[in-house]
Image 1 (tube, rainbow, N blue to C red):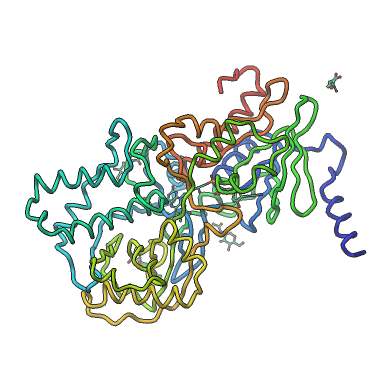
Image 2: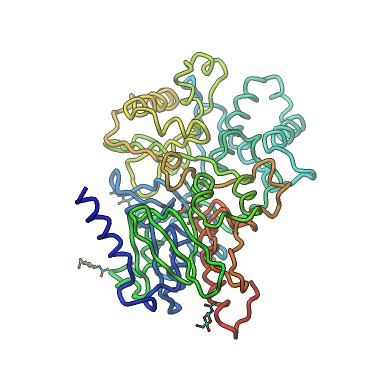
Length: 490
Ligand SMILES: Cc1cc2nc3c(=O)[nH]c(=O)nc-3n(C[C@H](O)[C@H](O)[C@H](O)COP(=O)(O)OP(=O)(O)OC[C@H]3O[C@@H](n4cnc5c(N)ncnc54)[C@H](O)[C@@H]3O)c2cc1C
Ligand SMILES: *[C@@H]1O[C@H](CO)[C@@H](O)[C@H](O)[C@H]1NC(C)=O
Ligand SMILES: *[C@@H]1O[C@H](CO)[C@@H](O)[C@H](O)[C@H]1NC(C)=O
Ligand SMILES: *[C@@H]1O[C@H](CO)[C@@H](O)[C@H](O)[C@H]1NC(C)=O
Ligand SMILES: *[C@@H]1O[C@H](CO)[C@@H](O)[C@H](O)[C@H]1NC(C)=O
């Protein structure tokens, strides 16, 4: 009891400003993922006093580089998607970091151990209907199936006799969409999405540098940098409540789980949509306005997951980006209900940061399930899966893995999902992401609590560069709001 009391008094002591109200921060940034780190560092570099509060014991959020195999792997974001006007790519170039393009090549295998007609599968995989936006919008699965059938009817009429192949291929395409969108089924995703790719190659890798280098650079830690004097970072600090002031003279109050609380003129909230969905009713005082609550409810955040295995040495063909697993209907029927999840794994991908490592990609409900299954089961079944698809074709008996790692983006209370996608409702709520991005204003109309994060980016959601853009957007909002010379065009 006494001890508890002491702890309590101690944390209050820590939280109290050291030298009166004038020492409070200009801005408190909540969350140090791509959006939060961009906002915090841009404000600090512009001379603002910034406090950043991060629940994890590390910076990076959904970017998480981990030493593994004979190098490192990414549990979260894997690639820089596009090199034209990309904040991530531009920073790498500026610091002379040699990023590497991972060439897009798929090597398909079937569940009976045979190789499919590789030229045919490659031709069909290269059909890309994602840039087409039918009016009115449709479910992606419905639309792609229709376009696919039109294509083979016109160009591959013989295939129409092989209904089993068509079904297998479309099932694989479904998984491919889910692994890209974080959806559970391609019919949950709309063709009416507003996503725009940046120009250039979509699979640029930080390879042995690791994606975490992006954060080292922003925080001025790269190459033994000395950090940023205007930025205080507190890790292991979960924020539980934000009190938005109504009166211009009052500060924003940010309360933390450890009992500490901090005040500042502004706060920028960058927690994921999953965290907002789970906590917003208690997180914000007063409660959020109706547009924002609607946006939080209507936008979807899905799950993409990774099971990462290392081996004594690589046993797979070089220069392949994806060993694709294409199930045959008959084989699938023989799999027990307990093992259903093994039929919904896209395939194996050799990450560029480690030479002796393969990543198996999961998505949707199966990704959630794989996070919770016992480790030995996941490991054993994944090795069996590699054996089933690749063993015969490569004439090898699968060696036991030397290392095992898996992502937990859904069960992690500080992410509660991997990234957002535009679901079937999205076309009816075209302003939802904008609503999510609007700041909460005080009675003088000044922005006091601001919002950033991938979900608030209308065109570049679900990416690291898109999240970073929103951090910059909110830093700019504050910098221009307080600088009469620059006007307030935001
Ligand atoms: C498996 C996977 C693969 C991906 N692949 C790619 C890819 O190849 N390329 C790409 O561009 N993008 C990819 N993404 C998406 C990309 O990682 C995200 O869009 C981006 O990192 C999100 O950044 P953010 O700042 O919006 O959110 P986050 O990174 O989630 O940052 C929010 C931060 O807030 C913290 N936080 C949460 N709650 C609290 C609280 N209560 N108090 C304090 N702190 C809190 C979190 O710990 C986190 O650090 C991938 C994501 C996943 C999961
Ligand atoms: C983007 O990558 C392509 C292909 O590697 C390259 O030709 C182009 O010059 C790059 N663009 C930029 C802006 O670096
Ligand atoms: C950074 O510091 C470490 C330890 O002082 C040193 O070994 C290393 O060479 C330095 N790296 C660079 C790039 O200066
Ligand atoms: C707000 O602050 C200003 C300047 O410090 C002061 O003149 C004014 O009286 C304050 N208003 C209230 C309602 O506290
Ligand atoms: C990994 O492979 C690359 C390319 O073959 C090579 O340059 C690198 O040295 C290898 N690294 C290790 C640790 O084997």
